[in-house]
Amino acid sequence: MIPLREAVGAIALILSVSAARASGPGWIDLLTGDPVSDAGLLSELRNARILYLGEAHTVPSHHRVEERLLRSLASETPPLTLFLEALESRDAPALSRFAAGELSFEELARTIDWPRRWSNFRDYRGLCLLARERHVRILGMDGPSLLFHRIARQGWASVSPDERKQMSLTGVRFDPLYQRLLQLFLPIHPGKGRSWQVRAAEAQEVRDDWMAEHIVRSLRKTGVNQARALVICGAGHLRFGLGLPEHVASRLPLPRRILLLAAPAERRTASGADSAGKTTGAPSIPHASFEFVARPLADYLWLPPDSFPVKDEPDHAGECPLGRRQNYSQRMPLREISPEPSRQKPRIYGRLTPDASSATRIRASRLSIGPAS
Image (cartoon, rainbow, N blue to C red; front, side):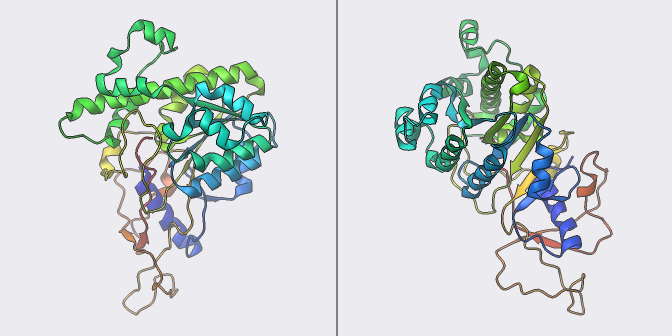
C-alpha cells in the first residue's frame, strides 16, 4: 500500500515522463494515476450520492476549490445538501435564518458564536454565501467539543450509558484499522504517554460517529431517493475511506466518492476544534508504517498550483534525460524523491509505482494532507 507522500511522488514521475512538467493545479485519479479534467471529474461524480471533500482547514486555495465544486454541483439533481465540519448540528435554526436572508454572514457568526469555536470561520464566507445564492441547504455536523475533549482525557469509558443514549451514541464501534491509523498521526505529549494516543483516537472516532449520525438522519429526512450530499471536513476524517465515510456507510450505504485536497509545501497554522488535539504540521512517518492499510487513499487527489515543478537531472553530456533544457533559477526549494524498486506490486496503485529501470529522477515539493483534523 502506498501512502500519500510516496503516491504523489510516483504520480509526479509518471507526469514528468508523459507531459514534461505538471505545472498547474488539477485532479489526479488515484486508481489510475491519470490527470482528470474538471469536466471528467464532474461526470464521474454524478454517479455518487455522497461526496466527501477533505481539506486542510486554513489553506485558502482549498476553499476556492470547494466553492468551484459547489457551483458546479448546485444546479444538478437531486438537490444538494452541504454539510460542514466547521459548523455544529445545533446550528440548524440559525442556518435556516441565514438561508432565508434574515441573517447576514456576520450576524450568523455572532449568533452561533462561531469566532470562538472556529478561528478561521471567515474562510467559509464565500462557500456559505454561494450556497445561499444557489439554494443549497447548509447543515453543521460537528458535535459538543466538551464531550470529545473529555473522551480524549478520560477515554470512551468515561461516557455513561445514559449519556450515550441521550446523544445517540449507543452504536459506536471502534475500527481497529482506523484506530491504528489515527495513532500514527497523534503526537505523544510529554507526561501523557501512549495511553493518551489511545484515548485521543477514541475521541476522534466518536466524533466521526456523531457526524455520521447527523448526516444520515438528515438524508433520511429528505428522502433517501432524493438525497445528495457534499460533505466538507478535515482530510483526517476521510483517509482510506475510514472514519466518517465508514460510519456513514454502516448506516446508509449509498454510492460515494472521496476527494482529498493536497496542501502546498509550506505549513499553515492549525485551526478549528479538534477533539484529539492539534499539531502544527504533519509528522514525519516512515513509509513502512502505512503498509498495514490495504485500501486506496481516496478516489481523487487535487494538487495545488506548481505542486511538482519537475526538474530533470542533466546527464553527463549536459542534456536532460528527456532531451529538454530548463531554467531552474526560479524554482522553489525542493525535496528529491528517487524511485526505488517495489518489493510488492500494489493491488490498487499499480500505475503509481515508479519503473525501477527508469533513469529519471525528479524533485518534488513536500505535499501533505496533514494530521487528523
